[in-house]
Image (tube, rainbow, N blue to C red; front, side):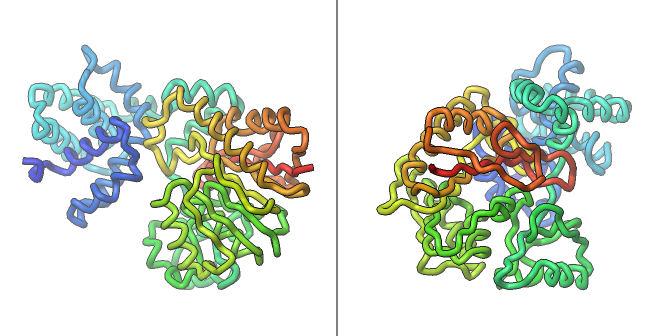
Length: 428
């Protein structure tokens, strides 16, 4: 019977798995591989799009229900249907028909009439519902409250941006080609692209493309990496002939960028996830950067120790990932308010351990892809209070927003990179 489910039913079942706690990154490819090629694009759009608008769809759906739907499959069906009628180019009659059929196929025929009625209402009053959708913050209430508190001036713009798709950005491998030359290759091929503002190696692609089909992908001429994530490699660190640790390295974007830019004496790429470390190795091999000076180790940042103190540590700390919600919209459903304090504690433990491995005069770059100040400037404030041998080195660049400690970048429009925080500490 399962093989006879229509596409909407398959979308609904995938979204239910996310609600049950499964990360979309872990299940999406296997779900896509079960589909005919012609269905993959729509499946991908409906899954990610519904997740992006999940809480906005929930807000407009609740007043339309005579009584609550205490069933995740039926509730999800309603959101998938509303997403199609309000946010896509799918013909309304097809969206309604296919979604109602999915409800029946999934065993809830008695409730299919309710879904049908609400979807028809949304079609008949489309502009009204689209406005309601646009004006809702689109976040779980606990996260909306935290962002409003932390970023009151940017809050509305931030909420709008977090419901959008993120830009596709390349980092050009300067050991292979300079950015202007690669940009010219793209333009000559008719690929719409533009030079990014902050990272000296970044190019933003402005159309839908297959990454592996861009020129010289296999030859390692570029990597896909968000512009704001690239700024770690743009900091003035002077790492030639230095011993460097990239803690929490997977999937290896920052590792690759550092090896492209500097002649590093020894670089340790650490991560507790052995499976994700395989991606680090794969990326470095493609970029032709995997030399004897690179050691990839599956180990936890809380316990790692070096035989000799190192010159620089890049700590891209585990975090709430609220700054990358555009790329991973399932974070809205998976992250819980009680997670935040656990994450803050883990960050502090890794910071404390890594600091022990840094030589006097060495630098630690603390990075997160979080929007929450408790994980960022407040974490650093607490660390400075507890470690008298730590001193902040102010970042001289003008990107982002200067904080009490460090600088914060926010995803505020379709061109901007993800939400990232940076702070540099020196051991005195």
